[in-house]
Length: 219
Image (cartoon, rainbow, N blue to C red; front, side):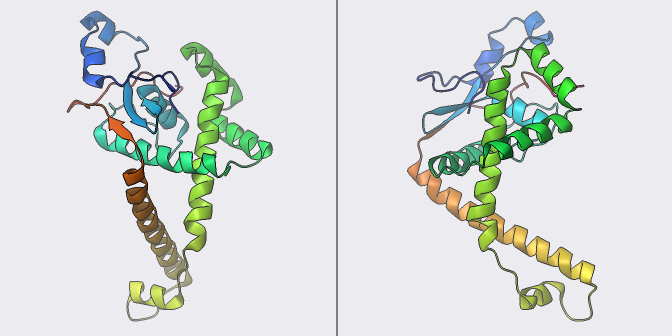
């Protein structure tokens, strides 16, 4: 998954040290610094992965300039486990699906021109960025097909959630969506707990203040 650190054995470094070793004037400047944050079944997750996921709103992340904290690393590890399973099952969509996901990612950052300029400014390889977009597509499709598709909410469930009395169709729909989301989250959590037992996962030491983001989203 890593933008810069994919499949480099023995490279799991402590993120705190990566930045501590750079002189203060370089830390304050706009210098592209990357660090391995975790390893999942031989694939490294780097700070650049988190930065890219945030910038393009991939793998459940949202744009933010704040440092990378341990809970976010754990979320990306979970996403990596799901994406790896989806890859094995070839749950990735058609080339047309991938292209649509690419266009949607571009739209989220201001359109194709702004997207391309941002990648040029950061010297990001578009093919590598596309791989991350495709990983997000696999992740989303697997969740839809493996979990959401098997969640069923009955009228009785909705009635229990809302309690006695009359309720508007909007209220019933909102309750149904909430129940589906909660059930899906429970099923995913159970699956992830089992997957973690089978997986080889290593996490770097994340300092209390977090790991600085190597780059941000387009302005």
